[in-house]
Length: 171
Ligand SMILES: [Zn+2]
Image (cartoon, rainbow, N blue to C red; front, top):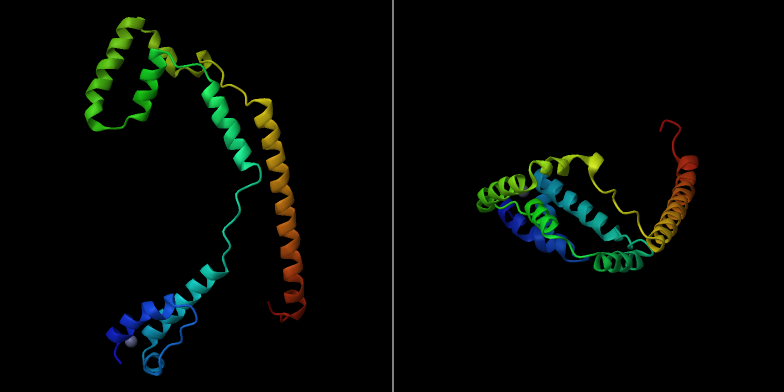
């Protein structure tokens, strides 16, 4: 077996659960350190992926999302100027830029220069505070996260203790 054949067999080998390298592949890895190294690194990577558990979404995620959607729906409809502003902020298309410049110039003419206050945070309406329902959910969520962190810290502690007592003093 040469490196080319080995490279062809490698995907099957690492992607099939429980697959063992053929005798020819093992023989090749013995005489070809680069191929052996590649196989081992793939094995390590996939081993880590197998052990990885996707994190659960935080508790109350669905409730929080539902509250946010309801609040967004309950908001008053935007005025024409807000709609124009949103459109300008969201649109990054190149062909829209001349129109954007024109619209801003027009807005400047119409507003007699007061458009400058748009970029002045001092004169902007304050950002609406989250509703009590959302705030409660956020607090619950934060508490839950804190408990989870405590749990995982404790877990790490328990995991590391035997390793420390068994490990060599040099480490
Ligand atoms: Zn090789």
